[in-house]
Image 1 (cartoon, rainbow, N blue to C red):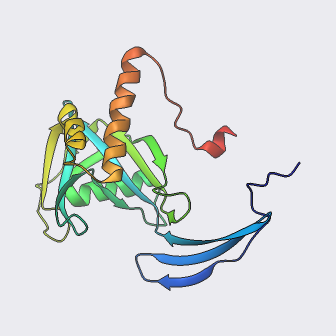
Image 2 (tube, rainbow, N blue to C red):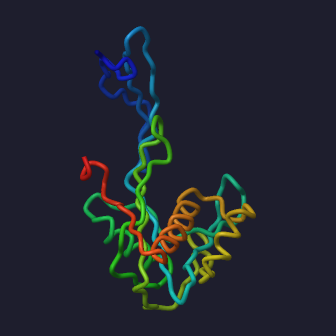
Image 3 (tube, one colour):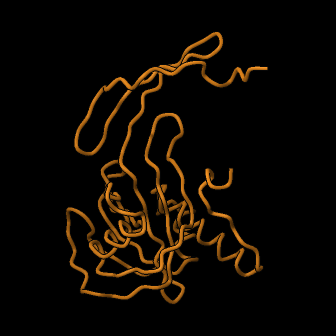
Length: 196
């Protein structure tokens, strides 16, 4: 029996738009009895780091266009093609905050959308942090940093003061992980392809 929910054929990529930040392309998927056009925005790999010290999480504040205001978020950003996730996140954190992170552990991996946003996002966590330099505000990037208690971070999410999907996912994922650690259970965060 054929799975009618799976495409019979998928076209090659058809470029729609490209710049140094992203690519937009379309592909047509033909199913049994119908066809769908998918328009995909493709970014490079991205990630964030839950860096903790004394029960507090390092957050960065930066201006965000869509909300027209400052946003508290996890440090992170684009992971270059030649970098491992861990190296890219350590570099981003140091550049943005002056804080060096080591011993990164994968917390979770997700895509912001599964039909139209190709932007694999990895969030790691660590308690192995050290302040390597004085924070230098950069209005074009990060204008402030702060260590905020985990419970306060969770409250900020539910007060809609933290709206960034990566930060929401990372903070709630980290809180969930800590709860599981306190009960002695473990969480399997291996890539799903490794588990198959």
